[in-house]
Amino acid sequence: MFKKCLAVLLVFTLLFSMGAITANAASPAAVTAAEEQTVSAAATEVSNPIIRFFYKVVDMLIDTLLTYINKFYHGTERPAEEEFENEYLCQGTEDFRAEPAADAKWYLGYSSDTLLTGNELDGTHYVGGSLSFPDPKTATQILDDQRVRIIAIKDGATSGVVVFAIIDGFGFSNTDVREIRKRLSDYATANNIVGINVGVLHQHSCIDTFGMNADLIRALINNSEGNLTGAKELISGKNKAFMENLFNVTVDGIKQAVANMEPGNLFYGSVDASDYIKDKREPIVFDPNLNRLRFVPDNTASKETYIVNSAIHCVGNGAAGTDVTGDYPYFMEKELNAAGKNFILIQGAELAITSKSELVEVEGEDRYQTLQRYGKRLAELVLGITEETEIEPLLNLAYKQSFVPISNEILSFMSSVGIINDVAVTTKDGETLLVTEMGYMELGKDFAVFFAPGELAPEIAYGGATTPQESWDGKSWPYVSMQEYIGNGKKLLVFGIMNDQVGYILTDNSWHSFLTENEEIVATGEKAGSTIYKDFMTLIDSSDPLVG
Image 1 (spheres, helix red, strand yellow):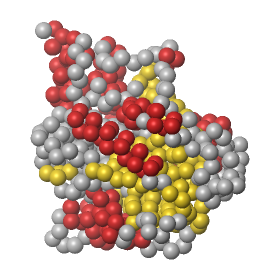
Image 2 (cartoon, one colour; image 1 turned 60 degrees about the vertical axis):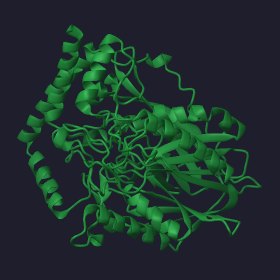
Image 3 (cartoon, one colour; image 1 turned 90 degrees about the vertical axis):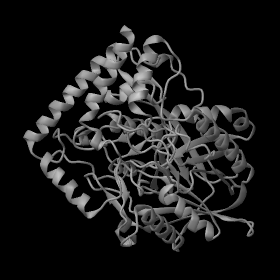
C-alpha cells in the first residue's frame, strides 16, 4: 500500500509541474498571421527582466522538486558510464579517401512499404505529436498512410554500402535503431554494409514510434508502481505489435533496397522554398532550399530516385489530433510518383522551422486539404529544378558515440519511468548522461552531411546564433558554424533526427524557460548544443584530415 501511495505521489507531483507547461508542449504548428502576432507579443513580454526573473524562479522550483524525486526514485537501471558498451555503433568507411577509386561508380537501390497493420483503430495505438494529456490520444481515423522509405548507396569501391531508412513518425530512439542493426548484423557483414541509419520525418500525426505519447496519467502511475515493486511490464506510447511489425518491415525493406542497387549517376540541385518556410523561434535562421540528390540509373527503364533534404516540421494537420496522416511528405510522394520518380525525404536542421502555407490556402478548405496542396507545391518545386552539379562517386562515412548531459529534470523523469526507452548512464560524480550518436558523411568532393541525433538549431549548422545582447544569460555562443568549421569548399547538409531523437538541440545561450517556449521542455538541457558541437569537431578532426 505504501509503495502504491508513493507511486501516486510521484505522478501527481510531476503532473503538477507539467501543468504550467502543457500549453507549450506541442511542437510548432503551421503558422498563421494571428499566431505570428502572438509570438511577437510573447517575445516582447519576456524581454522584460522582471518577467524573465519570475520565469527563472518557477523553472528553478520545478527543477528542484523533480531533482529530489529523481534522486530518490528507483526507476529503470542506468549503468555506469564506463560500463556501457555499444556493440551496434556502425563502423563507417575504413578511411577517408580524397579521390574516387579508379573503377568508382554510384550504385543506389530503393524500397518503400507501409507500416500500417490494419489494427491502428483498436484503441491501443497512440498518435504522436503532443502530450496525451489530459485525454488519451488514441488513433480515430486513418487519412492516408504511414510509411518507411529506404535507399542503399555505395560508390562502387570496396568501402561498403550505406543505408538510410526514413520512417514516418514523431521520433525513434537510438535503442530501437540498435535493435534494427542487431537484426541485420549477419546480413550487414555478409553484404559489406558499413552504415545503417534510421531517421524520422517528425510527423505529429502518425502512430507513436517514440513512446512519449502514452496515456500520460495511466503510464506514470503504472510505471512508477511497477518500478517500485519490481514489475517488468512498463507502459509507453508505443504499441508492441505495431513496433514489431515496423522492425520487420524496415529490416525486409533494407534487404530489398540493397538487392535493388544498380549503377548510375548522382546529381545535386536545389530550389529556394523560403516562401513556404517559417522559423518560429529567434534567431531567424534556416536553410531556405529544398535540396535534391537525383540518382539517374544507367538502365533507362529504371526509375530515377529523388532524395530530398529540407527542414520543415510535418505538422500541417495540427499537433494534437488523432487522425493518422503522413502529412505533406505523403503528398510530395504522390506527386513525384505520378511523375515516375522514387521519393525519399530526409529531415534537416528543423528546430522550430515549420510550414508556411498561405500561398496554397483556399478559402473554405480545412487543414488537411491545405497540407495536400502544400505537399503538391513542394513536389512541383523539386521537379522544377534544372541547374545541377554532378557528384563524383566518392563516399566517406564516420560515426561517433556521444554522451549528452541531462539537466532537464522533466525529461530525466520520463526516461527513468520508462515512457521512453533511451539509454542513460551515470558518471562517477552522479551526473546523468544520455547515450546517443552522430555521423559525418561526404558525397563526392563538394558535399558534407552531418547526422544530427535530434532537432538541431539551424544556427549551429549555418551561423547566426543568439548574441549576448539577445541571450537571457548575457553569454555568447563561442563556436563558428558547422559550415565554417568544415570549410566553405564543401556544402553542408544536415540529416536531422537521424539515429536518435534526443529532442531539441539549442545553442547553450538560447535556453529560455519552460513557461515561454516548447523547445526547452523537450530537450536534454542547456548543454546539448555545446556537447553535440564539440563531439562534431572531434568526429571531423579524427575522420578527415583534408577537411577545412
